[in-house]
Length: 612
Image 1 (tube, rainbow, N blue to C red):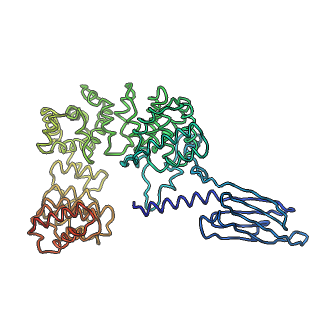
Image 2: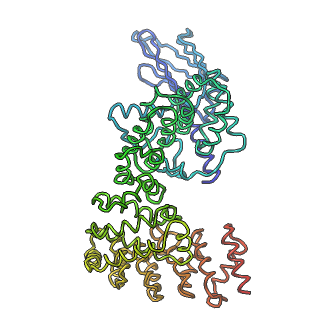
Image 3: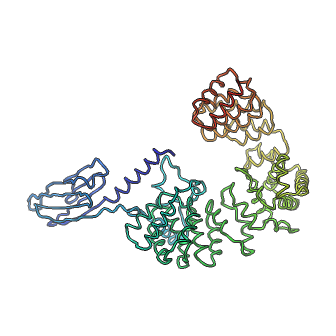
Protein backbone atom coordinates (compact mmCIF):
# COMPACT_ATOMS: atom_id res chain seq x y z
CA UNK A 1 0.00 0.00 0.00
CA UNK A 2 1.47 3.28 -1.12
CA UNK A 3 1.16 6.79 0.28
CA UNK A 4 -1.26 7.78 -2.49
CA UNK A 5 -3.72 5.02 -1.63
CA UNK A 6 -3.38 5.75 2.10
CA UNK A 7 -4.09 9.44 1.48
CA UNK A 8 -7.16 8.60 -0.63
CA UNK A 9 -8.51 6.41 2.14
CA UNK A 10 -7.98 9.13 4.75
CA UNK A 11 -9.69 11.71 2.56
CA UNK A 12 -12.59 9.32 2.02
CA UNK A 13 -12.98 8.95 5.77
CA UNK A 14 -12.75 12.71 6.36
CA UNK A 15 -15.42 13.28 3.73
CA UNK A 16 -17.65 10.70 5.39
CA UNK A 17 -17.19 12.32 8.82
CA UNK A 18 -18.01 15.78 7.47
CA UNK A 19 -21.09 14.46 5.67
CA UNK A 20 -22.49 12.88 8.83
CA UNK A 21 -21.80 15.93 10.99
CA UNK A 22 -23.43 18.50 8.70
CA UNK A 23 -26.44 16.38 7.80
CA UNK A 24 -29.33 18.13 9.58
CA UNK A 25 -33.11 18.15 9.20
CA UNK A 26 -35.76 20.54 10.47
CA UNK A 27 -39.58 20.40 10.24
CA UNK A 28 -41.71 23.51 10.90
CA UNK A 29 -45.43 24.20 10.84
CA UNK A 30 -46.87 27.29 9.22
CA UNK A 31 -50.66 27.66 9.23
CA UNK A 32 -51.12 23.92 8.72
CA UNK A 33 -48.41 23.63 6.08
CA UNK A 34 -45.33 21.48 6.71
CA UNK A 35 -42.02 23.16 5.89
CA UNK A 36 -38.95 20.88 5.69
CA UNK A 37 -35.34 22.05 5.52
CA UNK A 38 -32.65 19.45 4.79
CA UNK A 39 -28.94 20.26 4.96
CA UNK A 40 -26.42 17.80 3.55
CA UNK A 41 -22.76 17.90 2.67
CA UNK A 42 -23.37 18.53 -1.02
CA UNK A 43 -26.86 20.03 -1.10
CA UNK A 44 -29.67 21.85 0.72
CA UNK A 45 -33.34 21.20 0.01
CA UNK A 46 -36.48 23.18 0.91
CA UNK A 47 -39.85 21.40 0.80
CA UNK A 48 -43.38 22.52 1.53
CA UNK A 49 -46.04 19.85 1.99
CA UNK A 50 -43.67 17.28 0.49
CA UNK A 51 -42.94 19.27 -2.69
CA UNK A 52 -39.43 20.61 -3.41
CA UNK A 53 -39.63 24.37 -3.96
CA UNK A 54 -35.91 25.18 -3.80
CA UNK A 55 -32.61 23.30 -3.93
CA UNK A 56 -28.89 24.18 -3.88
CA UNK A 57 -26.15 21.80 -4.97
CA UNK A 58 -22.76 22.39 -3.38
CA UNK A 59 -19.46 22.06 -5.24
CA UNK A 60 -17.12 21.50 -2.28
CA UNK A 61 -17.23 19.28 0.77
CA UNK A 62 -16.13 22.27 2.87
CA UNK A 63 -18.80 24.74 1.71
CA UNK A 64 -21.16 23.86 4.54
CA UNK A 65 -19.64 26.70 6.56
CA UNK A 66 -18.39 29.17 3.94
CA UNK A 67 -20.15 30.97 2.40
CA UNK A 68 -23.78 31.26 3.48
CA UNK A 69 -26.28 29.84 1.04
CA UNK A 70 -29.93 30.71 0.62
CA UNK A 71 -33.08 28.90 -0.48
CA UNK A 72 -36.09 30.84 -1.75
CA UNK A 73 -39.48 29.68 -2.95
CA UNK A 74 -43.22 30.24 -2.85
CA UNK A 75 -46.31 28.20 -2.09
CA UNK A 76 -50.03 28.82 -1.95
CA UNK A 77 -52.29 28.35 1.04
CA UNK A 78 -55.73 26.77 0.76
CA UNK A 79 -57.23 30.25 0.46
CA UNK A 80 -55.10 30.91 -2.62
CA UNK A 81 -52.71 33.31 -0.92
CA UNK A 82 -49.07 33.12 -2.07
CA UNK A 83 -46.42 32.90 0.66
CA UNK A 84 -42.68 33.49 0.30
CA UNK A 85 -40.25 31.20 2.10
CA UNK A 86 -36.66 32.24 2.76
CA UNK A 87 -33.95 29.99 4.29
CA UNK A 88 -30.38 30.99 5.07
CA UNK A 89 -27.80 28.30 6.01
CA UNK A 90 -24.08 28.58 6.75
CA UNK A 91 -21.53 30.09 9.08
CA UNK A 92 -17.85 30.17 9.99
CA UNK A 93 -17.81 28.40 13.34
CA UNK A 94 -21.40 27.28 13.72
CA UNK A 95 -24.09 26.04 11.36
CA UNK A 96 -26.55 28.94 11.44
CA UNK A 97 -30.05 28.29 10.12
CA UNK A 98 -32.74 30.95 9.68
CA UNK A 99 -36.21 30.29 8.25
CA UNK A 100 -38.66 33.12 7.38
CA UNK A 101 -42.11 33.11 5.80
CA UNK A 102 -43.38 36.41 4.39
CA UNK A 103 -40.54 38.14 6.21
CA UNK A 104 -41.51 36.75 9.61
CA UNK A 105 -38.85 34.61 11.31
CA UNK A 106 -40.09 31.14 12.19
CA UNK A 107 -36.79 29.70 13.41
CA UNK A 108 -33.19 30.59 14.07
CA UNK A 109 -30.63 28.06 15.31
CA UNK A 110 -26.87 28.12 15.66
CA UNK A 111 -25.43 24.61 15.88
CA UNK A 112 -21.78 24.13 16.74
CA UNK A 113 -20.03 21.63 14.46
CA UNK A 114 -17.86 19.49 16.69
CA UNK A 115 -16.39 16.91 14.31
CA UNK A 116 -15.62 14.63 17.23
CA UNK A 117 -14.05 11.38 15.96
CA UNK A 118 -16.56 9.13 17.74
CA UNK A 119 -19.77 10.96 16.77
CA UNK A 120 -22.10 9.98 13.93
CA UNK A 121 -20.66 6.46 13.97
CA UNK A 122 -21.73 3.13 15.42
CA UNK A 123 -19.95 2.26 18.64
CA UNK A 124 -18.15 -1.08 18.48
CA UNK A 125 -18.67 -2.49 21.99
CA UNK A 126 -22.43 -1.79 22.12
CA UNK A 127 -22.60 -3.37 18.63
CA UNK A 128 -21.06 -6.57 20.05
CA UNK A 129 -23.08 -6.51 23.25
CA UNK A 130 -26.37 -6.12 21.39
CA UNK A 131 -25.57 -9.21 19.30
CA UNK A 132 -24.69 -11.24 22.36
CA UNK A 133 -27.77 -10.14 24.25
CA UNK A 134 -30.01 -11.20 21.36
CA UNK A 135 -28.29 -14.43 20.25
CA UNK A 136 -26.06 -15.42 23.20
CA UNK A 137 -23.16 -15.41 20.74
CA UNK A 138 -21.52 -13.13 18.18
CA UNK A 139 -23.02 -13.91 14.81
CA UNK A 140 -20.75 -11.86 12.54
CA UNK A 141 -17.03 -11.18 12.24
CA UNK A 142 -17.74 -7.77 10.70
CA UNK A 143 -17.13 -4.62 12.75
CA UNK A 144 -18.66 -1.16 12.32
CA UNK A 145 -15.29 0.41 11.45
CA UNK A 146 -14.63 -1.97 8.54
CA UNK A 147 -15.78 0.78 6.18
CA UNK A 148 -13.00 3.08 7.42
CA UNK A 149 -10.23 0.48 7.16
CA UNK A 150 -10.89 -1.45 3.98
CA UNK A 151 -11.30 -0.71 0.29
CA UNK A 152 -9.90 -2.06 -2.99
CA UNK A 153 -6.35 -1.10 -1.87
CA UNK A 154 -6.79 -2.40 1.69
CA UNK A 155 -7.93 -6.05 1.66
CA UNK A 156 -9.91 -7.23 4.64
CA UNK A 157 -7.96 -9.45 7.03
CA UNK A 158 -9.30 -12.22 9.23
CA UNK A 159 -10.01 -10.81 12.71
CA UNK A 160 -6.80 -10.57 14.71
CA UNK A 161 -4.50 -11.28 11.77
CA UNK A 162 -3.37 -7.67 11.23
CA UNK A 163 -1.87 -7.64 14.73
CA UNK A 164 0.08 -10.80 13.93
CA UNK A 165 1.57 -9.09 10.86
CA UNK A 166 2.37 -5.75 12.43
CA UNK A 167 6.04 -5.13 13.20
CA UNK A 168 6.50 -1.36 12.92
CA UNK A 169 7.23 0.44 16.16
CA UNK A 170 5.66 3.79 16.92
CA UNK A 171 7.69 6.96 16.51
CA UNK A 172 9.91 8.05 19.45
CA UNK A 173 8.04 9.68 22.35
CA UNK A 174 4.65 8.61 20.93
CA UNK A 175 3.85 6.47 23.98
CA UNK A 176 4.90 9.12 26.49
CA UNK A 177 2.73 11.69 24.72
CA UNK A 178 -0.23 9.29 24.64
CA UNK A 179 0.06 8.59 28.37
CA UNK A 180 0.23 12.32 29.08
CA UNK A 181 -2.91 12.97 27.01
CA UNK A 182 -4.83 10.14 28.63
CA UNK A 183 -3.91 11.21 32.16
CA UNK A 184 -5.03 14.76 31.28
CA UNK A 185 -8.30 13.26 30.08
CA UNK A 186 -8.68 11.30 33.32
CA UNK A 187 -8.00 14.40 35.40
CA UNK A 188 -10.31 16.66 33.40
CA UNK A 189 -12.70 14.63 31.22
CA UNK A 190 -14.42 16.70 28.52
CA UNK A 191 -14.81 16.67 24.75
CA UNK A 192 -11.54 18.50 24.22
CA UNK A 193 -9.33 16.19 26.32
CA UNK A 194 -11.12 13.07 25.12
CA UNK A 195 -10.79 14.10 21.49
CA UNK A 196 -7.04 14.71 21.91
CA UNK A 197 -6.52 11.21 23.34
CA UNK A 198 -8.89 9.54 20.89
CA UNK A 199 -7.21 11.09 17.85
CA UNK A 200 -3.80 10.00 19.15
CA UNK A 201 -4.96 6.42 19.64
CA UNK A 202 -7.05 5.63 16.59
CA UNK A 203 -4.40 5.68 13.86
CA UNK A 204 -1.68 3.61 15.55
CA UNK A 205 -1.86 -0.08 16.34
CA UNK A 206 -1.89 -0.79 20.07
CA UNK A 207 0.26 -3.87 19.46
CA UNK A 208 3.09 -1.58 18.30
CA UNK A 209 3.46 0.08 21.73
CA UNK A 210 1.77 -2.47 24.04
CA UNK A 211 4.78 -3.35 26.21
CA UNK A 212 6.27 0.15 26.29
CA UNK A 213 2.92 1.57 27.37
CA UNK A 214 2.58 -0.89 30.25
CA UNK A 215 6.09 -0.23 31.49
CA UNK A 216 5.64 3.55 31.49
CA UNK A 217 2.00 3.57 32.63
CA UNK A 218 2.66 1.52 35.74
CA UNK A 219 5.33 4.06 36.75
CA UNK A 220 3.07 7.10 36.21
CA UNK A 221 1.23 8.78 39.09
CA UNK A 222 -2.51 8.43 38.55
CA UNK A 223 -5.91 8.17 40.18
CA UNK A 224 -6.94 4.59 39.40
CA UNK A 225 -10.66 5.25 39.74
CA UNK A 226 -10.55 8.10 37.24
CA UNK A 227 -8.33 6.06 34.93
CA UNK A 228 -10.89 3.25 35.03
CA UNK A 229 -13.80 5.63 34.43
CA UNK A 230 -12.19 7.11 31.34
CA UNK A 231 -11.13 3.69 30.03
CA UNK A 232 -14.78 2.65 30.27
CA UNK A 233 -15.85 5.88 28.55
CA UNK A 234 -13.50 5.11 25.66
CA UNK A 235 -14.70 1.50 25.58
CA UNK A 236 -18.34 2.59 25.31
CA UNK A 237 -17.74 5.37 22.77
CA UNK A 238 -15.08 3.79 20.58
CA UNK A 239 -16.00 3.74 16.91
CA UNK A 240 -12.47 2.59 15.95
CA UNK A 241 -11.04 -0.79 16.94
CA UNK A 242 -7.68 0.49 18.17
CA UNK A 243 -9.50 2.69 20.69
CA UNK A 244 -11.31 -0.41 21.97
CA UNK A 245 -7.96 -2.19 22.33
CA UNK A 246 -6.41 0.79 24.12
CA UNK A 247 -9.29 0.91 26.61
CA UNK A 248 -8.91 -2.82 27.27
CA UNK A 249 -5.17 -2.40 27.75
CA UNK A 250 -5.78 0.31 30.36
CA UNK A 251 -8.39 -1.82 32.14
CA UNK A 252 -5.76 -4.52 32.48
CA UNK A 253 -3.74 -2.15 34.68
CA UNK A 254 -6.54 -1.64 37.25
CA UNK A 255 -9.02 -3.77 39.15
CA UNK A 256 -12.07 -4.18 36.94
CA UNK A 257 -13.97 -7.11 38.46
CA UNK A 258 -17.32 -5.35 37.95
CA UNK A 259 -16.78 -5.38 34.18
CA UNK A 260 -15.87 -9.06 33.92
CA UNK A 261 -18.99 -10.10 31.97
CA UNK A 262 -18.59 -7.23 29.51
CA UNK A 263 -14.95 -8.14 28.91
CA UNK A 264 -16.01 -11.73 28.35
CA UNK A 265 -18.35 -10.68 25.51
CA UNK A 266 -15.71 -8.48 23.87
CA UNK A 267 -13.17 -11.32 24.05
CA UNK A 268 -15.48 -13.47 21.91
CA UNK A 269 -14.58 -11.36 18.88
CA UNK A 270 -11.21 -12.54 17.58
CA UNK A 271 -10.08 -8.98 16.81
CA UNK A 272 -10.09 -8.25 20.55
CA UNK A 273 -9.52 -11.67 22.14
CA UNK A 274 -5.89 -11.11 23.09
CA UNK A 275 -6.16 -7.69 24.70
CA UNK A 276 -9.54 -8.49 26.31
CA UNK A 277 -8.00 -11.56 27.93
CA UNK A 278 -5.12 -9.39 29.11
CA UNK A 279 -7.66 -7.20 30.89
CA UNK A 280 -9.48 -10.23 32.30
CA UNK A 281 -6.40 -12.04 33.58
CA UNK A 282 -4.82 -8.94 35.09
CA UNK A 283 -7.87 -7.01 36.24
CA UNK A 284 -10.17 -9.73 37.55
CA UNK A 285 -9.92 -12.70 39.89
CA UNK A 286 -10.32 -16.42 39.13
CA UNK A 287 -10.18 -15.69 35.44
CA UNK A 288 -8.86 -19.02 34.10
CA UNK A 289 -12.31 -20.61 33.78
CA UNK A 290 -13.37 -17.54 31.79
CA UNK A 291 -10.30 -17.87 29.58
CA UNK A 292 -11.18 -21.51 28.97
CA UNK A 293 -14.73 -20.54 28.04
CA UNK A 294 -13.36 -18.03 25.55
CA UNK A 295 -10.93 -20.59 24.12
CA UNK A 296 -13.83 -22.98 23.47
CA UNK A 297 -15.85 -20.30 21.67
CA UNK A 298 -13.35 -18.52 19.42
CA UNK A 299 -11.35 -19.66 16.40
CA UNK A 300 -8.32 -18.84 14.26
CA UNK A 301 -6.16 -16.04 15.68
CA UNK A 302 -8.48 -15.55 18.64
CA UNK A 303 -8.02 -19.15 19.70
CA UNK A 304 -4.26 -18.76 19.45
CA UNK A 305 -4.48 -15.82 21.87
CA UNK A 306 -6.78 -17.74 24.20
CA UNK A 307 -4.43 -20.75 24.30
CA UNK A 308 -1.61 -18.38 25.18
CA UNK A 309 -3.51 -17.12 28.24
CA UNK A 310 -5.01 -20.46 29.26
CA UNK A 311 -3.46 -22.21 32.25
CA UNK A 312 -3.81 -26.03 32.27
CA UNK A 313 -4.65 -25.83 35.96
CA UNK A 314 -6.59 -29.08 36.14
CA UNK A 315 -6.87 -32.42 34.36
CA UNK A 316 -10.06 -31.48 32.52
CA UNK A 317 -8.45 -28.44 30.90
CA UNK A 318 -5.28 -30.37 30.09
CA UNK A 319 -7.27 -33.10 28.34
CA UNK A 320 -9.26 -30.50 26.44
CA UNK A 321 -6.03 -28.91 25.22
CA UNK A 322 -4.82 -32.28 23.90
CA UNK A 323 -8.10 -33.21 22.22
CA UNK A 324 -9.65 -29.89 21.20
CA UNK A 325 -6.96 -27.26 21.45
CA UNK A 326 -6.01 -27.23 17.77
CA UNK A 327 -9.50 -27.39 16.31
CA UNK A 328 -10.40 -24.27 14.29
CA UNK A 329 -6.95 -22.72 14.60
CA UNK A 330 -4.69 -21.36 11.87
CA UNK A 331 -2.00 -23.82 10.63
CA UNK A 332 1.66 -22.97 10.93
CA UNK A 333 1.59 -20.97 14.15
CA UNK A 334 2.57 -21.40 17.79
CA UNK A 335 -0.70 -23.03 18.91
CA UNK A 336 0.61 -26.57 18.28
CA UNK A 337 3.64 -26.00 20.48
CA UNK A 338 1.45 -24.52 23.22
CA UNK A 339 -0.89 -27.52 23.08
CA UNK A 340 2.03 -29.95 23.29
CA UNK A 341 3.57 -28.14 26.25
CA UNK A 342 0.45 -27.16 28.20
CA UNK A 343 -1.23 -30.50 27.49
CA UNK A 344 1.91 -32.33 28.67
CA UNK A 345 1.94 -34.46 25.53
CA UNK A 346 5.21 -36.12 26.51
CA UNK A 347 3.80 -37.38 29.82
CA UNK A 348 0.57 -38.54 28.20
CA UNK A 349 2.38 -40.60 25.57
CA UNK A 350 4.67 -42.20 28.14
CA UNK A 351 1.70 -44.13 29.50
CA UNK A 352 1.83 -47.83 28.60
CA UNK A 353 -1.68 -47.70 27.20
CA UNK A 354 -3.44 -44.66 25.74
CA UNK A 355 -6.94 -44.25 24.36
CA UNK A 356 -7.77 -43.93 20.69
CA UNK A 357 -8.90 -40.35 21.34
CA UNK A 358 -5.53 -39.42 22.85
CA UNK A 359 -3.73 -41.10 19.93
CA UNK A 360 -5.78 -39.09 17.43
CA UNK A 361 -5.38 -35.85 19.38
CA UNK A 362 -1.63 -36.44 19.62
CA UNK A 363 -1.47 -37.03 15.87
CA UNK A 364 -3.19 -33.72 15.16
CA UNK A 365 -0.68 -31.88 17.38
CA UNK A 366 2.32 -33.70 15.88
CA UNK A 367 1.15 -33.01 12.33
CA UNK A 368 0.77 -29.32 13.22
CA UNK A 369 4.26 -29.29 14.73
CA UNK A 370 5.55 -30.75 11.46
CA UNK A 371 3.82 -28.06 9.40
CA UNK A 372 6.44 -26.44 7.19
CA UNK A 373 6.15 -22.70 7.41
CA UNK A 374 9.16 -20.47 7.91
CA UNK A 375 10.44 -23.21 10.20
CA UNK A 376 9.03 -26.28 11.95
CA UNK A 377 7.81 -25.86 15.50
CA UNK A 378 8.82 -29.43 16.28
CA UNK A 379 12.46 -28.33 16.37
CA UNK A 380 11.53 -25.95 19.21
CA UNK A 381 9.77 -28.64 21.23
CA UNK A 382 11.89 -29.85 24.13
CA UNK A 383 10.50 -33.39 24.03
CA UNK A 384 10.34 -33.91 20.25
CA UNK A 385 12.35 -37.14 20.25
CA UNK A 386 10.51 -38.69 23.19
CA UNK A 387 7.09 -37.79 21.82
CA UNK A 388 7.68 -39.16 18.30
CA UNK A 389 9.24 -42.32 19.72
CA UNK A 390 6.25 -42.95 21.96
CA UNK A 391 3.68 -41.91 19.34
CA UNK A 392 5.07 -44.31 16.72
CA UNK A 393 5.18 -47.02 19.39
CA UNK A 394 1.48 -46.51 20.18
CA UNK A 395 0.78 -46.47 16.43
CA UNK A 396 1.40 -50.21 16.41
CA UNK A 397 -1.82 -50.51 18.42
CA UNK A 398 -3.86 -47.59 17.12
CA UNK A 399 -2.89 -46.99 13.48
CA UNK A 400 -5.95 -48.29 11.67
CA UNK A 401 -6.89 -45.57 9.14
CA UNK A 402 -5.25 -44.12 6.07
CA UNK A 403 -5.02 -40.64 7.60
CA UNK A 404 -3.30 -42.06 10.68
CA UNK A 405 -0.70 -43.72 8.49
CA UNK A 406 -0.29 -40.49 6.51
CA UNK A 407 0.94 -38.80 9.73
CA UNK A 408 3.62 -41.48 10.01
CA UNK A 409 4.83 -40.65 6.49
CA UNK A 410 5.19 -37.00 7.51
CA UNK A 411 7.23 -38.02 10.54
CA UNK A 412 9.39 -40.12 8.22
CA UNK A 413 9.91 -37.13 5.95
CA UNK A 414 10.99 -35.07 8.96
CA UNK A 415 13.66 -37.70 9.67
CA UNK A 416 15.24 -37.22 6.23
CA UNK A 417 17.08 -33.96 6.98
CA UNK A 418 20.83 -33.73 6.52
CA UNK A 419 23.51 -34.68 9.02
CA UNK A 420 24.16 -31.10 10.14
CA UNK A 421 20.50 -30.66 11.05
CA UNK A 422 20.55 -33.85 13.08
CA UNK A 423 23.68 -32.77 14.90
CA UNK A 424 21.73 -29.74 16.08
CA UNK A 425 18.76 -31.88 17.06
CA UNK A 426 20.90 -34.35 19.00
CA UNK A 427 22.37 -31.46 20.94
CA UNK A 428 18.96 -30.13 21.95
CA UNK A 429 15.79 -32.25 21.85
CA UNK A 430 16.69 -35.67 20.41
CA UNK A 431 18.75 -38.71 21.34
CA UNK A 432 20.14 -41.13 18.72
CA UNK A 433 18.21 -44.10 20.15
CA UNK A 434 14.96 -42.14 19.83
CA UNK A 435 15.55 -41.52 16.14
CA UNK A 436 16.38 -45.21 15.55
CA UNK A 437 13.24 -46.29 17.41
CA UNK A 438 11.04 -43.95 15.32
CA UNK A 439 12.57 -45.28 12.10
CA UNK A 440 12.07 -48.91 13.17
CA UNK A 441 8.48 -48.34 14.30
CA UNK A 442 7.51 -46.69 11.02
CA UNK A 443 9.32 -49.35 8.99
CA UNK A 444 7.41 -52.08 10.82
CA UNK A 445 4.05 -50.41 10.21
CA UNK A 446 4.83 -49.76 6.55
CA UNK A 447 5.15 -53.46 5.79
CA UNK A 448 1.40 -53.65 5.55
CA UNK A 449 0.67 -53.27 1.79
CA UNK A 450 -2.81 -51.88 2.43
CA UNK A 451 -1.57 -48.28 2.78
CA UNK A 452 -0.07 -48.12 -0.72
CA UNK A 453 -3.11 -49.91 -2.13
CA UNK A 454 -5.41 -47.31 -0.59
CA UNK A 455 -3.23 -44.45 -1.85
CA UNK A 456 -3.35 -45.73 -5.43
CA UNK A 457 -7.08 -46.32 -5.19
CA UNK A 458 -7.66 -42.74 -4.05
CA UNK A 459 -5.54 -41.34 -6.88
CA UNK A 460 -7.01 -43.54 -9.59
CA UNK A 461 -10.61 -42.90 -8.58
CA UNK A 462 -10.35 -39.16 -7.80
CA UNK A 463 -11.42 -39.74 -4.21
CA UNK A 464 -11.11 -37.31 -1.33
CA UNK A 465 -7.67 -37.13 0.28
CA UNK A 466 -5.48 -36.81 -2.81
CA UNK A 467 -2.76 -34.79 -1.06
CA UNK A 468 -2.38 -37.49 1.59
CA UNK A 469 -2.40 -40.19 -1.07
CA UNK A 470 0.37 -38.43 -3.00
CA UNK A 471 2.47 -38.28 0.20
CA UNK A 472 1.92 -41.98 0.94
CA UNK A 473 2.80 -42.95 -2.64
CA UNK A 474 5.96 -40.85 -2.38
CA UNK A 475 6.83 -42.56 0.92
CA UNK A 476 6.71 -45.94 -0.85
CA UNK A 477 8.59 -44.51 -3.86
CA UNK A 478 5.75 -45.76 -6.05
CA UNK A 479 5.80 -44.80 -9.73
CA UNK A 480 2.69 -42.64 -10.12
CA UNK A 481 4.04 -40.54 -13.00
CA UNK A 482 1.38 -41.57 -15.51
CA UNK A 483 -1.43 -41.13 -12.98
CA UNK A 484 -0.30 -37.61 -12.05
CA UNK A 485 0.25 -36.45 -15.63
CA UNK A 486 -3.23 -37.66 -16.45
CA UNK A 487 -4.58 -35.59 -13.57
CA UNK A 488 -2.62 -32.54 -14.73
CA UNK A 489 -4.55 -32.59 -17.99
CA UNK A 490 -7.71 -31.72 -16.07
CA UNK A 491 -6.13 -29.65 -13.33
CA UNK A 492 -2.83 -28.06 -14.47
CA UNK A 493 -2.87 -25.56 -11.60
CA UNK A 494 -2.67 -28.04 -8.70
CA UNK A 495 0.81 -27.46 -7.32
CA UNK A 496 0.68 -30.68 -5.25
CA UNK A 497 0.80 -32.71 -8.45
CA UNK A 498 4.00 -30.90 -9.42
CA UNK A 499 5.58 -31.48 -6.01
CA UNK A 500 4.86 -35.21 -6.24
CA UNK A 501 6.71 -35.38 -9.59
CA UNK A 502 9.62 -33.24 -8.36
CA UNK A 503 10.45 -36.12 -6.04
CA UNK A 504 11.30 -38.32 -9.05
CA UNK A 505 14.31 -36.07 -9.81
CA UNK A 506 14.11 -36.59 -13.58
CA UNK A 507 14.95 -33.67 -15.93
CA UNK A 508 12.66 -35.06 -18.62
CA UNK A 509 9.72 -34.91 -16.22
CA UNK A 510 10.65 -31.33 -15.31
CA UNK A 511 10.64 -30.41 -19.00
CA UNK A 512 7.20 -31.99 -19.42
CA UNK A 513 5.93 -29.99 -16.44
CA UNK A 514 7.31 -26.78 -17.93
CA UNK A 515 5.46 -27.62 -21.13
CA UNK A 516 2.17 -27.74 -19.21
CA UNK A 517 2.63 -24.11 -18.13
CA UNK A 518 2.41 -23.01 -21.78
CA UNK A 519 -1.36 -23.22 -21.32
CA UNK A 520 -1.11 -20.46 -18.69
CA UNK A 521 -0.48 -17.81 -21.34
CA UNK A 522 1.13 -14.46 -20.48
CA UNK A 523 3.10 -14.69 -17.22
CA UNK A 524 2.03 -11.13 -16.42
CA UNK A 525 -1.57 -12.32 -16.16
CA UNK A 526 -1.21 -15.46 -14.06
CA UNK A 527 -3.84 -16.48 -11.54
CA UNK A 528 -2.65 -17.00 -7.97
CA UNK A 529 -2.59 -20.79 -8.42
CA UNK A 530 -0.72 -20.51 -11.73
CA UNK A 531 1.83 -18.20 -10.15
CA UNK A 532 2.48 -20.69 -7.33
CA UNK A 533 3.09 -23.41 -9.91
CA UNK A 534 5.50 -21.24 -11.94
CA UNK A 535 7.43 -20.11 -8.86
CA UNK A 536 7.71 -23.71 -7.64
CA UNK A 537 9.04 -24.89 -11.00
CA UNK A 538 11.59 -22.08 -11.19
CA UNK A 539 12.82 -22.90 -7.70
CA UNK A 540 13.07 -26.61 -8.56
CA UNK A 541 15.16 -25.82 -11.66
CA UNK A 542 18.19 -24.84 -9.57
CA UNK A 543 18.91 -28.60 -9.38
CA UNK A 544 18.87 -29.04 -13.18
CA UNK A 545 21.76 -27.16 -14.72
CA UNK A 546 20.69 -25.57 -18.01
CA UNK A 547 17.16 -26.99 -18.07
CA UNK A 548 14.24 -24.65 -18.77
CA UNK A 549 16.15 -21.58 -19.98
CA UNK A 550 13.26 -20.35 -22.14
CA UNK A 551 10.95 -20.79 -19.16
CA UNK A 552 13.31 -18.75 -16.97
CA UNK A 553 13.58 -16.12 -19.70
CA UNK A 554 9.79 -15.86 -19.81
CA UNK A 555 9.74 -15.18 -16.07
CA UNK A 556 12.51 -12.57 -16.38
CA UNK A 557 10.48 -10.65 -18.95
CA UNK A 558 7.55 -10.16 -16.60
CA UNK A 559 6.90 -7.15 -14.40
CA UNK A 560 6.31 -9.42 -11.39
CA UNK A 561 8.97 -8.91 -8.70
CA UNK A 562 8.63 -12.44 -7.28
CA UNK A 563 9.04 -14.11 -10.65
CA UNK A 564 12.03 -11.92 -11.52
CA UNK A 565 13.71 -12.68 -8.20
CA UNK A 566 13.23 -16.46 -8.35
CA UNK A 567 14.30 -16.59 -12.01
CA UNK A 568 17.51 -14.66 -11.50
CA UNK A 569 18.27 -16.60 -8.30
CA UNK A 570 17.94 -19.88 -10.20
CA UNK A 571 20.25 -18.56 -12.92
CA UNK A 572 22.87 -18.14 -10.23
CA UNK A 573 23.05 -21.96 -9.93
CA UNK A 574 23.47 -22.51 -13.71
CA UNK A 575 26.72 -22.63 -15.65
CA UNK A 576 27.03 -19.27 -17.40
CA UNK A 577 27.85 -20.96 -20.69
CA UNK A 578 24.18 -21.93 -21.03
CA UNK A 579 22.94 -18.34 -21.21
CA UNK A 580 25.97 -16.29 -22.26
CA UNK A 581 25.23 -14.39 -25.46
CA UNK A 582 21.47 -14.97 -25.25
CA UNK A 583 18.53 -12.69 -24.56
CA UNK A 584 18.77 -13.78 -20.92
CA UNK A 585 22.19 -12.11 -20.65
CA UNK A 586 20.67 -8.88 -21.97
CA UNK A 587 17.87 -9.06 -19.39
CA UNK A 588 20.38 -9.69 -16.59
CA UNK A 589 22.35 -6.67 -17.76
CA UNK A 590 19.24 -4.53 -17.70
CA UNK A 591 18.35 -5.64 -14.16
CA UNK A 592 21.90 -4.93 -13.00
CA UNK A 593 21.40 -1.31 -14.02
CA UNK A 594 17.70 -0.61 -13.67
CA UNK A 595 16.03 -3.01 -11.21
CA UNK A 596 14.21 -1.30 -8.34
CA UNK A 597 14.57 -4.47 -6.26
CA UNK A 598 17.92 -4.25 -4.45
CA UNK A 599 18.28 -8.05 -4.21
CA UNK A 600 17.58 -8.60 -7.91
CA UNK A 601 20.00 -5.84 -8.82
CA UNK A 602 22.76 -7.27 -6.64
CA UNK A 603 22.36 -10.84 -7.95
CA UNK A 604 22.32 -9.56 -11.54
CA UNK A 605 25.60 -7.71 -10.93
CA UNK A 606 27.13 -10.85 -9.45
CA UNK A 607 26.07 -12.88 -12.49
CA UNK A 608 27.63 -10.39 -14.87
CA UNK A 609 30.87 -10.14 -12.94
CA UNK A 610 31.23 -13.93 -12.86
CA UNK A 611 30.34 -14.08 -16.53
CA UNK A 612 33.12 -11.67 -17.39
